[in-house]
Length: 457
Image 1 (cartoon, rainbow, N blue to C red):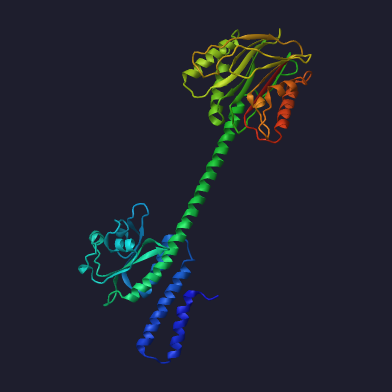
Image 2 (image 1 turned 180 degrees about the horizontal axis):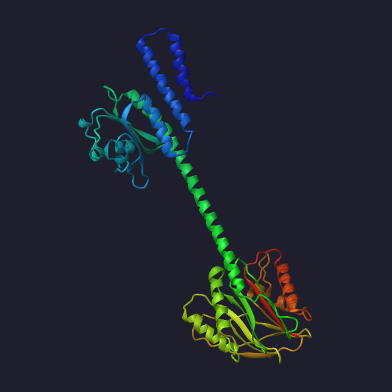
């Protein structure tokens, strides 16, 4: 298929061929038309050579100046927000100074062309009342004549193309105006293409930055998750101990707010705790780390769980943190089986007797840690016989949902616990998680899960 821009070239060539020797004037005119048609063809080809606005405009202007020799040329773009014109491209000795200038809407000949959308030829600026000398005064550039044409994109004027001081004796002509208007057409295409290209580049750069941030955050979250896990017990007690304790934490994300801990206070007493911070992610993990540090740092032989929680709450509330944590903790006497417990707004623990009976542990309710500085925490007691088990959990168990948003519920937990007598603590926890995940049936885990099982042998 033949390009439309080649037709003027071929037409002119055929005419010359038919003229034979012809007159010199006619031959010169046709040769000039061929050169101009070739310029338009070159401009059309150059539009496909680059998508960068400055490069496109430079190429177009350089091609146009081959057939329309001038001392200076410039492209002014209309600011869509202010209506001002600014110099996108300025060729000539004063190009750098010119690019600093902005013309108000309608100011000077360039402003009037942008406003009216009509081309203007001025061959004597000194006698034209429309002429504004602000640019000339700033740069010292003497403007004798100029030709200004609009750059149109459909019905919208994007800016103006202006050439100044035609080289030679004659001023700008109607033919010059037609040529420059033809040059301005591809410029509108170049501006639109470059705008789209810049938008794509900006989107790609934003995507690259987002990806880099995401990768950095993922790396930091992995580190934070490792730090969080370092606060939890790494090993379970040996089989020689008169008790079997095991716990598990499964965060819904890389880091979470659920926590547990257990450690021996002395040879006869084991401390244990499990809790749930009100938030998720790194803030919750930091609050969890502070809480576990305070619990372990302040626990002393002879101190009751209620006294410990009261002291820790005072510390957390004093710092005016916006987070809080539900919690249950206790001290297990390994010799007698007595358990002293205290809680702060947490899920009800359960005792599974060796014979299969399920008993909720009824503790006096208190506020979560960090919720209110003057909260007081109370103690409750129970006794574990041989084979009896105490189970602590967070609401990630009972509030786990399936695809139709049904919750696992306390009732299902109790039904599960009825099947656990004779199982070790590790077996109970593994079976419970399997039971919950089977109920969820592939639905994503929406909350952190923590479980602790303590059984007296």
